[in-house]
Length: 270
Image (cartoon, rainbow, N blue to C red; front, side, top):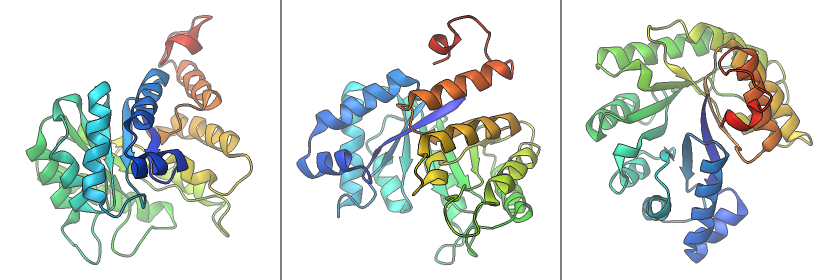
């Protein structure tokens, strides 16, 4: 499974303070610890931690690259922040651009821009595309899958390798009123999205969004990730420092015959 470590994000107080203080050590320790814990990519998200999001994105990337060669996931809703990050990143390490909807009211061509930017940036640059369009986040399975189909079609038309495309069906917080049906909609969408192309796109999600505001965050997250893995999800933005969650992922992959069983399988999976 492709695991994207979520912790270098300005929404976390330690990262927010490190950005304010320009304290590279905090960022570098998070990068090293997440890599050691099994992260395939490190998510890098300025969030609202700084007014200069472009400059801060570059500072974070440069700080990480001084001590770590792990692939990076540039995470921003602002395309200019993604572009700024690409100016200082080493694309040979692998890059994931997170994320683009199919389209939005202010930019009908946003998906095209992400695809073209990834193609220009190098062969190891992939993108995350959300099953979301200018009408917002769909609340049902069928609309999610229909948007995913358009995303895949657009990628194929532009000659973008679907193995470098990550489709995110957008998990919603379970605590939000009327949202408890959404996890089942997501699972149904995952099952269908994996058949949209051959080779199939990756399927990912921001797992921690599911448990926002709940009292049992780790339990909810690790339970759902095992369910999603069984349906075909092969990537997620997660807290790789949550040992119980990582053990659940490793056990799921072993039981699905994706990892060889041994008495020490928890130690060798990541």
